[in-house]
Length: 422
Ligand SMILES: Cc1cc2nc3c(=O)[nH]c(=O)nc-3n(C[C@H](O)[C@H](O)[C@H](O)COP(=O)(O)OP(=O)(O)OC[C@H]3O[C@@H](n4cnc5c(N)ncnc54)[C@H](O)[C@@H]3O)c2cc1C
Figure 1 (cartoon, protein in one colour):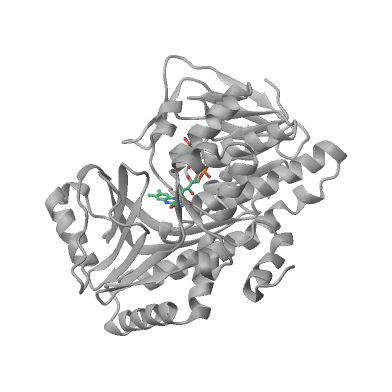
Figure 2 (figure 1 turned 45 degrees about the vertical axis):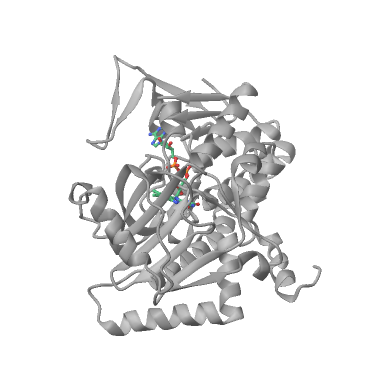
């Protein structure tokens, strides 16, 4: 098999890249380990930055998002038994976020790619990358693959033979556990890691939204988040021990914990519903530098992970592939490689800023139970400051709705702050 750009992973990063390349007349093949149904039903991210929503709209895959997604103009920070609204739209010159599930974004992208005759090979596992430092890099893969989640291993049905996809460029959009990152040699690759001493206990609930805007709460017992995925499905989280088991948490105990952490002096009540999924996710920050080697580029979770507190993971994946699509476009239309050569540097500037924001939100909103009360009191003071100072609220708001996707757009931020034109 031969293609111009071989993409490993058909999550948001890989599928959007394939779509952006198609719009520029560049051919690609996406290899995705899981079945289409599995990817389309995995509920993960749900907060789209202003720029992410705009990109989907501009490239013709935002119609359902605009119809079915929810526009949010603010978030609530809740502490000391009171809620404080951050008016994101008012503080950022009219920008907002969209609540629209990652699985819905991927569904829209799959439909667009498949209708345009795009090639997404489902249940195909990349096993090895080769010749990355030549002009004909290769992806070795096997079809009929499936992910054995319990064992954390890839398995194959029948005797699937190894095949080879020869490309001009290979892009690793294979998430944190995929094989592409390891193809950057150890002596070239640096991995920055921060593991947090807590996890998130997440539930999916059938029922209407409990609030109009997302609530981020800090309570003596720990963090809680009230979020939504659609008018019918709600997403709630609370901070937990990352080693805890969902089996220790019957439904009533979960609601009791959430009620305690979200309680307010004015008697706000939490809308409850049928819990149909429970899971625990660990919290870590991770950045791989550089994000490219030879003719291999990494994008999205394959290159970086942020704790979900800042709602940045999928948005970073989108920003990466936007930069990469422009670089590949430059190469195919002019033969120049300037944008491709600076891909890693361009992306990492934004990735580090989003990591800082995600780390800051995480540090401000979680209980560090192993530390003394001094830290907790500082966190409360910081929340008090953030919610009472216009400058501090603006800083949170502009990060939350999304920093500019590429350096040339950075002038827009200062224009928003001064209310002037660029
Ligand atoms: C609980 C939770 C909540 C989150 N909330 C938010 C949020 O509100 N906002 C936000 O922006 N982000 C959020 N995120 C993060 C977001 O989900 C990820 O950042 C996003 O999925 C990254 O997209 P990706 O395409 O880079 O990687 P993935 O979505 O991980 O896609 C990688 C794909 O590669 C495939 N793959 C892996 N190995 C192979 C192989 N060997 N061969 C072929 N294919 C392979 C996988 O099957 C997968 O489909 C959240 C994450 C979690 C876990």
